[in-house]
Length: 129
Image 1 (spheres, rainbow, N blue to C red):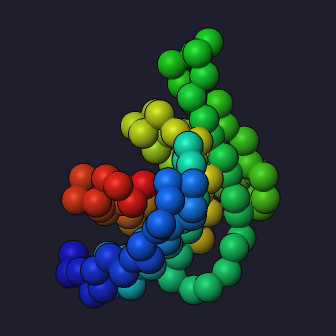
Image 2: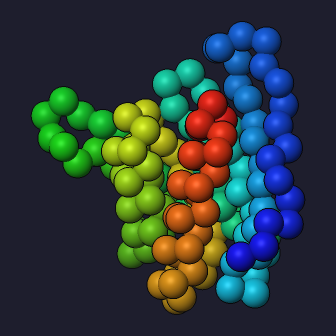
């Protein structure tokens, strides 16, 4: 994996403002773009190769269950990638997480590598999520 673009960000004046963080990486011969909008108490993550929003899922932690609650807000209900990713990120961050995953799900290895890249970015830039 080669990093093709590294972390362009918009500075924020207050904690209540929305901050933006973008990064890209070539994964399995495909350039994947990541767009993060950090909000108070959560974040929105868009993942894709082309600029479209084909699905949107949200997940959040619950005091009643160790698995975060999640639902698909937009898109094909038979594709659970956005839902699953939002749950895992909500569990990791303890925040409300919106995810739009716009890559082909036919390559399971791609999905795993994309998730690993997100986690790597979260380790390097924890304040952006």
